[in-house]
Image (tube, rainbow, N blue to C red; front, side, top):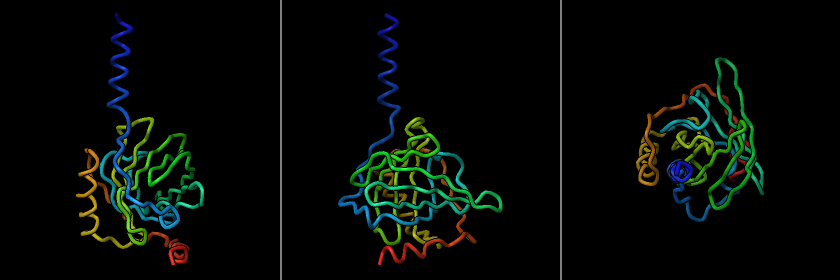
Length: 180
């Protein structure tokens, strides 16, 4: 009896404890999406920890992405590196800090913004909506509109945190060349 109840509880946890699977952007272009992104806004419970200033993500590689997350810690820039372990059509799993992080690209124009859902697969309560721009300059109207659209696709509860991109190192020159 106890074994049956335990298995039922584990099945319920499995169903309700998984990361969400919103639909990715249609006709995803892996090559155009690669490069550097400044993460301006995060809603929810961040997948790896608090949202720092100068939060950025760089994706490189043709077949599988290598990912580098950079951020300011005091007066120093730090980074976390990882790699894509699976992915297709705008849905990816990256291994970062010994955790698998699911990322679904919800919307992008490839040249200026993207909105994505991210979830720590070991702790699905740590899931977010990210709005990232290629630029350090904020576009409040675009960010607001992207958040509104994304919240129709995923159920995220939690606070909004904006990453301060002022006075951050500008490493986007290579992206301009990549996109042209």
